[in-house]
Each structure stands twice: as C-alpha cells, then as structure tokens.
Length: 480
Image (cartoon, rainbow, N blue to C red; front, side, top):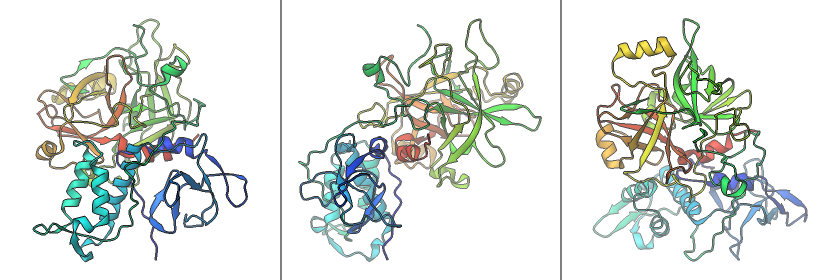
C-alpha cells in the first residue's frame, strides 16, 4: 500500500516557485496541447515525494518537467507531461537542497528505523547523499544542525561506523548539475490576495512595495517609534465583556487582504474581531496625520498542526483575511500602511539567520511588569501600551536557547533576546521580528512573536515562529 507523506518544509522558498509554476503552461507530450502543470504530483517510482514544482527526476537529460495529469491520489499519469520553459519557475540550488534535506528528515521520522539493516555508512545511499546536501548548507543553519543530530541517532555501531540503512529512495543530486532560477511572480494585480510584494521592486518600478518607512524624511526597555517607521504593523482587536474593543495581539501586513500573526492570537473563546493598520499612538492624531484603517474580518486560517495545549512545539502561525482592501501608501500617500517583505528567495535578507543577528521587534505590548501601569494603559488606550514601541533582540543559538527556555525546535522556531531589560512581552504576541541588512533597506520578516516568560525583561529569551519554515503554507493559503 503506497502512502503519501505531507511534508512541512523548513527553510523552503519553493512558494516563489509556485507563484510562477502554478501558472505554468507546458506542451503535453500526448495531445501536443498547452496544459497547466498539475501540482502537486507524485511519481509512481517515488511515492514518498510530492512534487510541488518542476522536477528533473528520471529525465535522461536532466531537464525540468511537470505532470499535466494525475489520478485521484495525485499520481502522475504516464505520458502526460511537458518541459518547463519560458515563464515556468525552477528552483535555485539552495532551494533544491533545502527541499531534499527536509524530504529525508520526514522520511527518516516516518520509518521504523530499528528494523533497518546495520551497515557501514559508506555503503548507505541515504547517508552519502545526506552528506553532500548538508555540507552545502551554512554551518550554523538550524536545518543543517537538526539534520546532523537526526543522522547521529541512526548510528547502530559507532566502532565500525555503521548506521541503520533503509532504502529511502532518495534522488542523487549531481554536484555539477546546473540548476537555474527564474524569479517570476505571476500575480501582478496588487489588489489580489495572492499578490506578493517584492523587496527589490524599487530597482524595477521605482516604487517601494514592502518593508520601508512611509514617513517623509511592546517591548520592555524599548524606545518609542514615529508614525510611518514600521508601516506594516497591525493591531488585532478583541471584544471584551464590557462591549469594548481591546487590542491584545499584533500582526504584519502581507498584502491588501492578509495579515500574518500567531495562531494563539485567535481562539473560540477570544476570536479576533477587527484589524487596525496605519496606527501609531492609539486614539491620538496630530494635524494632517492620516487616520488608521479599521477592517472587518473575513476569515482566519490557523496552521493545522497548531495545538494550544502543546504551544511549545511550534506551528504558532495564522493568516487573517480582511473583508475590505487595505489602502496602501504605495498608491496613495494619504495612507501610512505598507506590507512587510517576506524572504521568499534564498538570497533575500533574513532567509538565513545566524546567532548574534539583531532583530527589530515592534508592538503595543506591555512595557512594565507593574500590573497597575498595564491596567491604567488598557483603560486609557485599550492596549498594554498607547504608543508603538520597538526593541532590538539578538538571535540566540539553539544550545543556549534550550538551556534558557527548556524547549525550541530550531527548524520551525527562532530564539531571540535573553538580555535583561529588553524583551517582547504580553501584547506583542503575533507581531513581527524583522531584519534588514543595511540602513534604509527593506525589512524582511523572519519571526512571529510566539511565547516567553510570564515576567518580561528578566533575561530569558523570546520564542518566535520561524517564517521561512512556513512559506509554502502561507502561499498555499492565499486566495485572490
């Protein structure tokens, strides 16, 4: 009985591939007609691999192709295929390697490895391919670290250098294989919920689509910001028992229809009621300043593996789709809002993270552990802080993080902070952790504030959802 495995890819930007590939037309080899690629598809000879992009598997010339017809189980139908050319997107080497590493991880985690034969690692196909792939990843890459830890667990005889060697049917990537990347975002309509803003757009169109300031010229220990400094910020409002709206979580603007936030910011008992964008100091406006936009909720999509009872395991991510279109500074300078950039490409800033990198965190969360001050702010502003606050938190390596917090799955989470007096705190949940390479460059979101300690700023780190681990999920849930 053949089974299909649903992969949760870490560090994958295949969704930029999907942006072009989902619209990819190829010439069907049987009918000679133009057909759309049928994604995802599974090869009968490789039943454990779902192809969500063009592949060069089993092609004698190593050319990329896609299926144009699948059965009810998603299995490719022989003869119905075409070569991916023109506007079809093909992954670059880092993306392909990342996909392969994650596939192997999922296969190893799904196998009963204790029943596998114990063989010398040099004779084990999956180990040799594993080594080639992981050696191309950065030494500090959380994915590489996780991969190596998992490989070590398969050692069955350390003295003779033997490992549990099951046939995982892993494709062998030629080190000299030429892998091309065509960055082609097919959705150009900025009103569409599938529109993906680009951090490199100014070079092409002369317009900044995401991650930059829109002004003309919370966080314990943080400093106040100015209107337009972080125009991608969103407030999430909740209806309290007194019938008033209170803002208890944050989020980031992805495009005119979607807000990215944490899954724990929405529940049956406390559903999100509204989204506010273009806000800075709640309830206070200077002369000629644009008013914030308050938007109704159309629907909320939480990650299917999110479980509040096991929040520490991750998957704390959700999308909020608003009913109206968010009015952006991109087209009308009377408004402040602008999307954040996501690191869809392997060469985008923030796609890879390293310990010591300082992330910018913003929000209207608690700025004090004094309950009286917090209650006073909620009464005055309907939020833990009346003004958006920012702070800078360094990324912490996985080993240090586990010592401090007790848990962290670094393939899908980020650990940051750990400095006394500096922290993300209650009310900052769901808000973005962003990174930019240089001053005035675009901010790329790398994290979503998930959880921390009950008391803030006590030298314990904050755990965030790693955005690059969920790019495929984000893209697959965007609708026009």
